[in-house]
Amino acid sequence: MSRRLLPALAAGLLVLVTPTGGAAEAAWSDAGALTGTTVTAAGPTGPVLSCGLLTLGGAQVTWTAVPGATGYRVRYSGADHDVSAATLSQSFTAVLGSSTVTVSALLGSTWVSTASNTRTVTVVGGLVGVCT
Amino acid sequence: MPGSRRRPRPRRLRRRDSRRAAPWLVGLALLGLVGVRPTWAAWTDSADLTGTTVTAGTLDVRLDGSDNRASTTLTMAAMVPGSSAAEVVVVQNNGTAALSWTLSSSLGGAGATAYSTATALRLTVRAGGTRSGSGSSATCTGGTVLATDVALTSSSATVVTAQGPLAGGGSTSLCVQVALDAAAPSTLMGVVATVAVSVQASSVVT
Image (tube, rainbow over all chains, first blue to last red; front, side):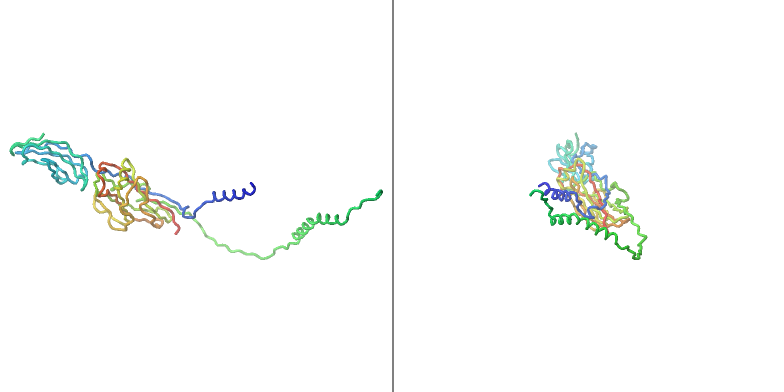
């Protein structure tokens, strides 16, 4: 029995140790790399809002620029007001009474950063402006 | 019977003797053949093919002369949906053997999984393309498109299938563009990842 099995075992061993493939698998190889590329998405931190200079009959707020911002959304009197990326301040001269102000950065057409800290602007009668 | 002697059977003896003698006869016959083998006295001549030298080629692919070429304009510090950066890279065969090449890419860093899951970072490759625009609004234009907006993942994947052959000393220019998809989710805000681009070359028989 074992004598009959020996040739079969030897044939199987040959199949196992016989290298497969042709010239394509034996091709030489080398590689080159393009390194050092880091991508960072803008946001989500919004700008920092500050009180600006007092103006005659009004008040002003300013905010820090946010990298990648394509514009800013200033919210006051319960409404949003979008301004360009180059605009980093907003004056209030026609606000009646008091309003809280926040600013968010617009990041492309769909992303909006978190809102800035809040400032309160009060303009009384178009004569006196206060920002706190 | 007393006094009688048993005589061997002559016929059986003769057969046994002939069996014993057979190998000797065969051996003698073979010896005779060797002994009488004729000598080969034919004339001979030869002619040589000379001057053949074989030299193994070398395989050495480089990007702008370097094995590890640092990108200069692909990094983006504050991407927003629709942002893109581009860079022109020259694939060089710095060896003597012809090669074919493929280009693969993968994402690394802390945000690799987030970008990979969102399929938000896209790679475009143009052979012979040029870089248009600047900063995070640069794109590849012109040339021949080899890959368009292929989503990059954490695991390395082939972006450009086999190109070439590129002869020894030859080169080809590629414009590589990385872009953040315009529909990228806002959950990616502030996420950082690295983009690895690799060119793999294999020798080819031409």
